[in-house]
Length: 331
Image: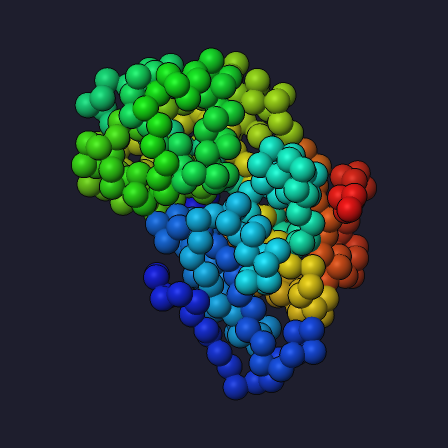
């Protein structure tokens, strides 16, 4: 199947070529990613130099707390591009869940990059063998207000586990992995592409187990939300992981601020897909990048396209026959 640092602050990969973004000369494009121990940051770290070279647009990356943080950075104009989960993108556009009463339509989709698997990692010494065993244990459900927290809550809910039933901790992926290694927590949730760096490093240094989401509960999740799909993490992705892991997955989207020049986004979109070989060579997650993956109507992009990306998809005649409704939220 698939998938095989801090560049302080925002690393400017500058070129001595004038670039116009919205009429501004030499304007860098900033990509909001995620925790430095997570896949968003890893993906952004190799994507930025590839696109800089191809487009001649200077691109930098920003380490963040993930999807929710990234949407705020886009809406405030502090980021131009971002990687976010498809469910969080739709919640923002529709004014649901965390965004109830505060719709955020500051961004448009560019591409779906890869599947984000729901990892539930536990310390064997804790006695945990199944998700049901999390009751009474110390469990990190992700950073407070993060996409992982939302997914963890939804997974626990289908297993009839309330937050009061566990000792909740709010930690990013790297902090949670360190805490489990040091026996400060018993388990943690991590929603990211596999292999995600923090888990890979943890597995290389400590015995861990992965909790499965069985088919019955996975079906409940897919019925609850159209963003979840049943998924398998193949055996051998992590050290000591000798069996496949049944779980669910979402999609990592690349999105762009709607104020970013259509010409710039067109160039970024075109070069993103036309650089698939280089992206695959740089990172195992690149194998999943494709126009068809972006437009799979069963796991698709439900938010409005950035017009620059739309220009590229129209140019290559690759819009799907059954396209999801793309509506701006009512003001």
